[in-house]
Amino acid sequence: MNVTKAEWKTIVFDKNSNQYAAPNGTIGHRWSEGGEWNLHLKDTENQLGDLEPALTFLGIEDKSVLLQFPYFGQEQKQIMSRGVPVKAIQQNSETVYVTTVFDLMLAQTGVNRGLPGDYPKDYDDPTPYTPAWQEQITGIDRKPVAQIAREFAQNAVDSKGRSMIIMGSGINHWYHSDTIYRAILNLVLLTGSQGVNGGGWAHYVGQEKVRPLEGWQTVAMARDWGRPAAFTKWNLFLLFRHRAVAV
Image 1 (tube, rainbow, N blue to C red):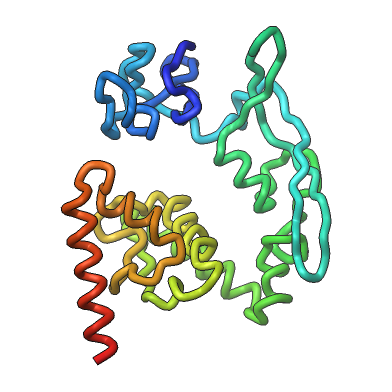
Image 2: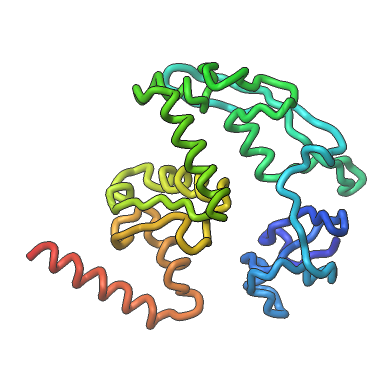
């Protein structure tokens, strides 16, 4: 597959054609000739038509391999060896194994799908990222944690993605704000709620104190398209907002 600006394009495995494809809408497409800067699930490089990306390789894998996942907890530091389903590709006369982000995420968080490795036995196993594990750190009982998670997911199933998390600006004021944001986004992404009217991640105040402010402004205000006008308006808004708070 000859893909221009390949290092800036996400690759998916298309279940319709059983081939790898680069869907539109990535940064690589933004700066490529041809203007495939959209979110249509089509592969313009290979003309495969409509794509159906595989979420997981489980069930269609060539084999499973054990990966090493480091865990850096205050109470312990360890390496967890967990199986991941992979497909084999040939690259420069060498066999390379690839998998999906979803498969890596489930292995990292210890979701047991019958693969080999150091997976938790159940929710009561204090292995990192289980309800029992978090109980030791937060003091929150494991049972309501699992119950709320199930109810949030079941509501997304019943309502076709209308599970929502609403948060305020407090998250933005702390050093690890980006990590907290990712945790919230993972919840709505895994339940198919992000981008659904009435679902997803909602914020009821401005993002004026988000730590990675420079990158956030570039994405949120399309500065690569609208600068300097959009950039100036945004900064004037912040200036007046902070002056009003000061007064």
